[in-house]
Image (cartoon, rainbow, N blue to C red; front, top):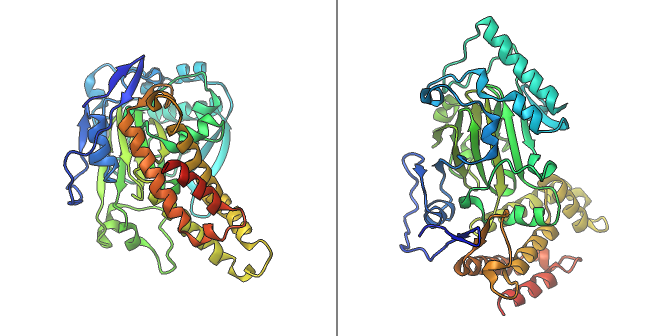
Length: 425
C-alpha cells in the first residue's frame, strides 16, 4: 500500500509482513527499483539488511539547482563524461555561506585515513573549478569508467562529512526520502539540537572514500545529485577474509584483491538521482567516477537496533582489553565508558537515553500517529508506532540482562527496568 497524504504530511504506512520467508539468500546482483512502495522497502530490504538502489528520489530537491542541466539526456548516461559545467559553481557560491568545511586529501593518508584539511567553502569551490579548467585546457582525459586508478599529479580534495543541513537549517536543499524517514538516531539528535549524522559530499572525479563500514553499525543512504559513483560492497562477514594477522582492515581495496581472497562482493554503478541503501555491517569503498555531489545520512531504527547494540558491546570489550592493566584503578568502568564515547561516538548511557527518547515519543498521549513529525514531512501509522514500541521493548529487555549494565554504578539497570515497565504497561 502506498504512502498516503494527510494534512500535508506523508503517512508512512507499515503493515505486517504478508509472507514470512525463512530464505535469506543474498541476491545475484543489487536490485535497481523505481517507485518502490514504503512497505515493500521496509520488509524486502531494510528489515532483511539487503542493499537496494532506488531511482528518481531527488527530482524535486532544491539542490538540483547545484547542477547545470546538460544539453542532451545522454550526457548523464553511465558511460558518458559530464563536462565541468555540470557543477553550478556560481549558484553554490551564492546560496551557501563561506564557512569552514571539512576536506580530505585523497592523495595523502595519515594513520590509515585520508589526511584531513579545513578550507573555507568558497576557496574549496575555487580550487575545484580551477582544477577542472586546467584539465580541460591541457586536454587531460579521464581514466576509464569503473577504473580504480587515482591520478596523483593533481589536487584530489574531497569535501566530506559536511553538516550543511545543521549549519544552515533555513536552507531546505533536500528532502529525506520516505524510505529512510524512520530514523531514531537523527530524530533524537535534531530534536535535542545535538550533532547529527546528515552530510553533504562534494568531490572531483577520482576522489574516493576508503574501505569501511558505517559508524555504529548503522544503515546509510547516499543520493547522487550529480555525477557517477562506483561502489564495491560486501555482505557482513566477508570483510574477515581481508584482515591481516592482527585483525587490521586494509585501507583500500580493488577487485583483484577481493578475487584473490575469494570475497563475495557486489559492484554498484550509481547514477545521478539514485539513492543507494547500505545495510548494517556491509563494508564498502566508493569512487567518484566524475565530479560528484551527494547527500548522505547514517541512521538506525528498530530493524537494526540490535546490531548497533552488539557493536557497542564489542567496542566496550575492545576498550576494556586496551586498558586491562588499569583494572584495579578506581572508577575503571566509568573510565571505560568515557573512552567508549570518545572512540565509538556513544556509550551505554547515550544508548539508553536514545531509547528513552524514542519511547517517550512513541508513547505520547493522544493519537500516537500524530504526536511527532519526522523530518518535517512524515508521520507513522499506528502499526508502525506499535512496531517501534515492540522493538524498543525487546532491546530494553536485552539490556537488562547485560552484566555490565547490571553492575553499573550509574544505575543503568534501574533506568532500563523503568523503561521496560513503561513499554510493557
